[in-house]
Length: 332
Image 1 (cartoon, helix red, strand yellow):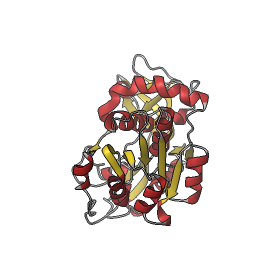
Image 2: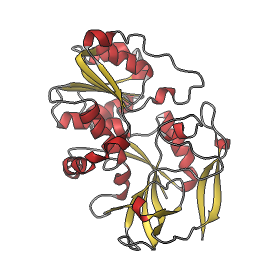
Image 3: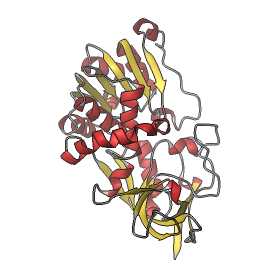
Image 4: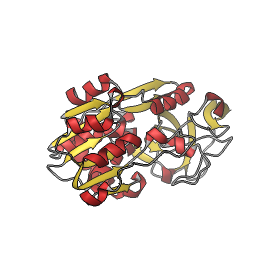
């Protein structure tokens, strides 16, 4: 059998280009002692991966040139040399961007395909969902009655943040998205109180119209003009949780910062960045609380599914363009 896997062959400058990557055929690896061989069924592509394609120092090691990239994946164990994991089990792991992966059993988490669709363990019940939960509750210190603004609200994380806020008693939830169809989705399906298309006009003006009384919490997935607008609408004691800044990921020059940071003095506001990896102690609490909402349909989710390992790169680029509604998944 042969394995296909994506390698980074050059570091992108600005927007990634197809020639920065290569789909390579390799032999299917053999598991050693304490390892399992997994045939991946679903791969995750996420905005943070753009940062790992750069050599710049960050919170995660850069992808190595000429070697297979990494990312979330869920698949079936087809060979096991490890106790506790058997052939036929399904596991969640971090050896994506490939069809087959060998990994230490300690790096695999068993998941139940009968309890929920396998793809959800990469999204609404996985790292994406925990990101939304931890960022909203712990970093942004959400409390009942808050007015919440979410950017990138039709994306995998943003859509869950808005719904969690509503389910936990937010007085008003506002979202921004990049198309009129996504705006409609936010209001009609996800239950946001208001939403706007950031491409249709000034973000600051549209946010003030949607939240005339200001906002208590801003969950930032975009940065740039959205962050400046949120600071401008922040109420006293407001909190901003910075999850991502997709608007600047492909910039070749440093982006200008918000021009109104002094307003944080007036509002006693707080901005705090976070990484989901620092909050895995909330995993059990998250699943116990959110799982029933997913099962009952109270918390809705969408997935944009691209089929075929050969289309993984295009799926990733689609995330950067905002083509996805909900979690972008590659089905193998």
